[in-house]
Length: 393
Image 1: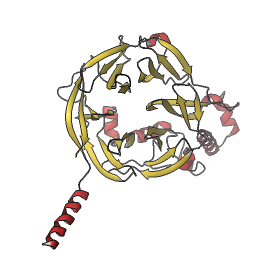
Image 2 (image 1 turned 180 degrees about the vertical axis):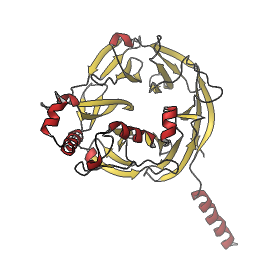
Image 3 (image 1 turned 30 degrees about the horizontal axis):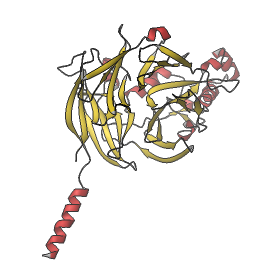
Image 4 (image 1 turned 45 degrees about the horizontal axis):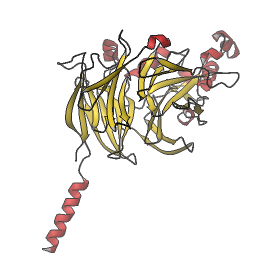
């Protein structure tokens, strides 16, 4: 009898330990916005006074620019107009609500990126020009703000070397007449940038981290990759840093300026590691390189679920070059890879582009909201439809 009880207990724990961690559908929510989702103009905002969570969605590409606030069931609570034309913003990357009286609009215009502050009435009251915020005296480095990198109350950005440092490209070529030396010199300039900075939304101060992250991925004297750009995600008080061309993720603590971990994004559905180019074979054929980069799979975002102590890595899948040129779209099949708090892979779930859109995923207290695709049969451009997932208990 005792052996039978011990056997059953052992079997129970074996079955429990083998249970797969997976996302299951909880409910569906429809937000009647009057406009389709665009860019990174959505998120959650928690009102500490009312002790209530709001989901907001904004539109900046129509005549009536505004942000609509909803509860988790899709009920519209209020809206804020956005008079962005008065701020002369040229390339709006996205909208972030710090609080109703502090709405942040990111302008990613290449020659003059800006951070604009708007109040509850939709009027701007401050504009921060960040083009020349980091300057060595002889050369300037241009920051690239991205809405995926904004977490209250900070915006994380990365830099790249500014071509405007050269008055004439021919001057650079005269200095390095050999094409190989020219490419090597350019890539060394590009990859000696401090790389990461943090903008404090409250104090409007910027901190540049001294680490040179690009050097951790390649040696510019022997090989190079198509992109110097980095994915930077801030979750659970950690920076997750990964270049567009690589599946390796560095985990960095910005407080102590130290790397604390590293892991690789391994997908059962997507090829993420792009091959490097030998510098002797690279003849500045940028368009071919960029096209090859675009067809590969890529890490899109990392989201931390503090209630379940899990990380969700959103990875869009590769597509053939033929499909890319035929469709020329950002719509892709994608996966959500689930990791535990120690970055051990627990599961990977596949999502079709015909049903869902990887570009519009966010976490609220109610679960993981995943947008339905614009390819669905009942698509309505005046409504934003989401499927809410939760971890199976």
